[in-house]
Length: 114
Ligand code: FES
Image (cartoon, rainbow, N blue to C red; front, side, top):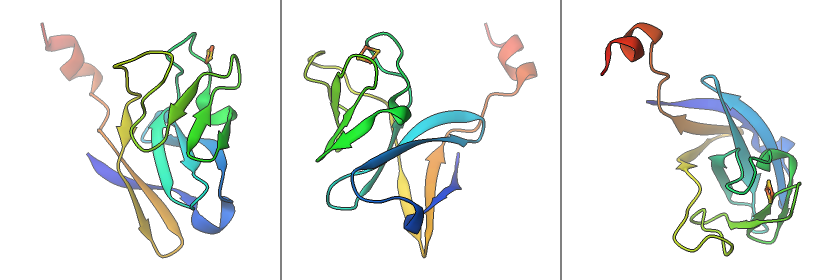
């Protein structure tokens, strides 16, 4: 587990989103209308749409495929009560946007856990 630099503050306008790869994992990095950054899983709970290729409307992230909406503050989705997108901690250090993601599981460790 650790924070990884994944973007520059200056590169993202409020109400924008992009896909970033952090420690081998693709996530959706979004900036809400107030300029706060949010990092969530890139996979839509509907049919797996790439959320980082969608758009931000106020404080909601909208999937590009069928427009399901997720609240950026907690990952909740009105279409799936009780469901929340996995979220990742974000830290700003100067102009750097840092996201904390779990370390990938080494292949040898994964194959020995049963
Ligand atoms: S895949 Fe995201 S709304 Fe359908």
